[in-house]
Image 1 (spheres, rainbow, N blue to C red):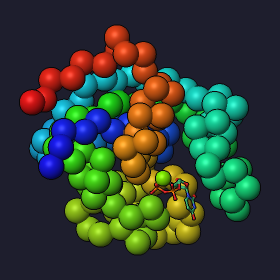
Image 2: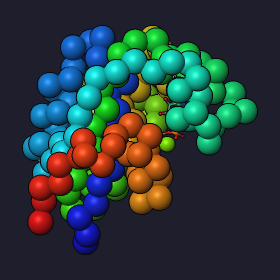
Image 3: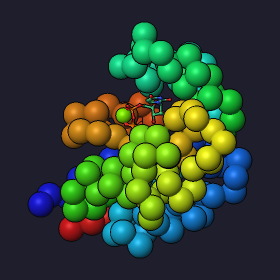
Image 4: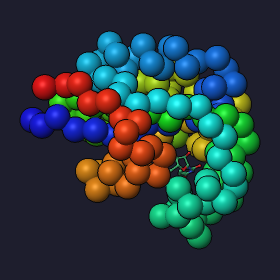
Length: 148
Ligand code: UDP
Ligand code: MG
């Protein structure tokens, strides 16, 4: 096991639902340390750049519109195997498919909503993408490692 850093986003739906503290609490209870944090609103262009890997997918337009629809909280999380452990806490991409106890199921599931884009949180999926995504939002002097 290795100490890793990963990029996490609390998406506009969860910020609007006043769930910032609830989500931070889940990170901290799971030994993920918040070592950088800020609130901001993405422009449509910035959302398109962040999700460029999904350009051309059927959900890209809805996703980037949603991600630029309101303020988000971005943070760097640090801990043992932070990338995969964070993904496990988040749950499956679509809240309807996510297991009970995960952030996406507990905090984003709405039986009347068939969409997947408003799923409360984002998390990097690999070491390489974590570094790219951290660099997208944070300068090195805005990050305060403290594990290990
Ligand atoms: N998404 C969507 N419909 C889909 C798949 C993805 O709206 O069928 C959105 C959703 O917000 C997801 C994001 O696009 O979080 C990025 O998709 P990805 O497959 O990378 O899922 P994630 O890594 O966030 O679980
Ligand atoms: Mg992804």
